[in-house]
Amino acid sequence: MPTTELTATITDAEWRVMRIVWTLGQADSHTIIDLLVRQHDWKPATIKTLIGRLVKKGALGTTKDGRQYIYHPLIAEQAAMDTALTTELSQMCAMCRGKAFVHAIDETELSQEDIQALISHLQKKLTTAPTAVSCDCLPADYEGSC
Image (spheres, helix red, strand yellow):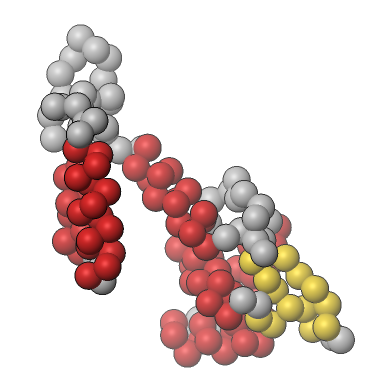
């Protein structure tokens, strides 16, 4: 079971590789290459490079099966998604994050179950939320706006 915490950033292209391995649970390079060539028309050498980078970053582990390597995730998919989203949000102005969330929700296909979970969570969070969030982009004696 994947547990290792990833400290390096995963690029957009590397996410595509990881999504395949997470979905399949494990995969050899031929399977990963075949799927990505069909989905994105990438060159096999590019995909091999991406796999190698993910191994070096500690996102993928390998086991040898005869002459080929089998790749398996060393990080859990949900943990990686949570970390990526939290990292992105931490780079944004605190005062503007809410608008970014609203936009992301508008642009994201969500199930009714996901929407109900969001509503429930937001209703609970509303009870302890401040009336306003201050800008954290500038020193306190400056005023920002979104």
